[in-house]
Image 1 (cartoon, helix red, strand yellow):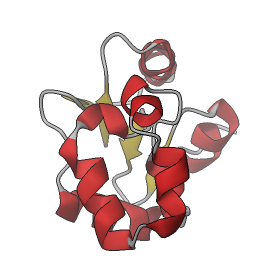
Image 2: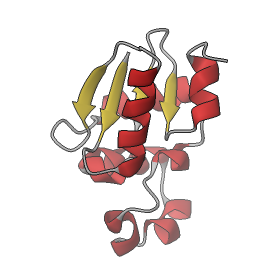
Image 3: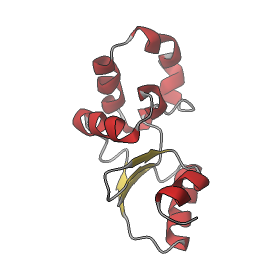
Image 4: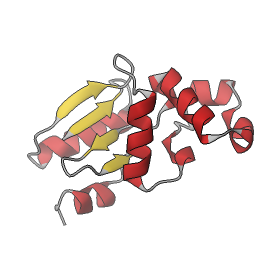
Length: 119
């Protein structure tokens, strides 16, 4: 399993702590140092079952400064993938890539517990 995080993000730190407390083995990847590629985002979107807009870090400075909320309705999926791939800070985090191919975006403890068999 792999987790994409930003070291200064409180939610990421909380998710990492939770994984460690559960004794899970995982590989950590910096979402800023090794930003997601367009191809990865396409694959993760398909595996997640989520609407594409759920991959945006809507609380982020870039999202707000670039008025993404207003631009999204007029954008194609291709344009959205390119925008998300342009900067790791654009992507909601953490992103958890499960060994079975599943993808979780954002940390919601109940969802993670279910996905990882921790109920």
